[in-house]
Length: 273
Image 1 (cartoon, rainbow, N blue to C red):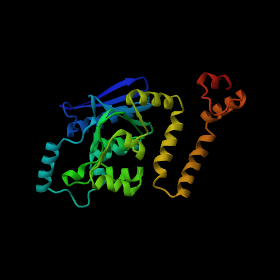
Image 2: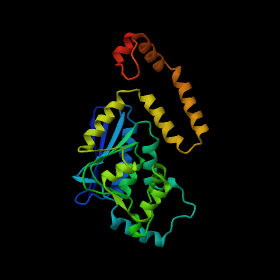
Image 3: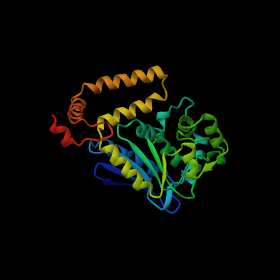
């Protein structure tokens, strides 16, 4: 039976998917991931989440095909309503929570990451892939299906729509090096989990509310006109600039003469309060 594990490293939560031998995602694991997100996002000490594979060379290979086949047979008997919404799908609800939550979520892709696995990774704020010969992508067209977990919409927002359509329509998967060239991943590393932990530590050393604001602006801006995006940004800046937190940091920088390349510690900031 597949499992979803949680390992805490201070304020960073590492969530791993484990379903040997093939590393498929199934319905039970999907429900478990939903419950894990409930737990982590309700905990104010969670400052970052890393998703990764719990077995060698596999992040999530793709959804369990026999289970998907059973679902298809059931739908033939009892079709879904024609006016179904995205929120009717637990999988869409999970990926939207990953996108919309205040904490950064990083995919440490340690091996094959296709279908729903790649769709989960696309919902994350950053993707770090292991260097090596394995596959990333959306090969659902090989079973005469378009991606069903947000892959079409998110891939077309991440890269050029024509390239997204090519990859989806031809069921083409890519290796980590090509994924980096296409902009599908942020970086390729010999140890993606270690890389993601360093990135998470750099993020969590900074303001939690500031990171949440930046994530909101970056996520929402892609669906807005430039004027609407700038308005969103300006409102966030107006709200933050007069806050106690920002005013204290600004006083410390002004007094010390440091520039913005330097991250001041809470103790240094407090000494200028």
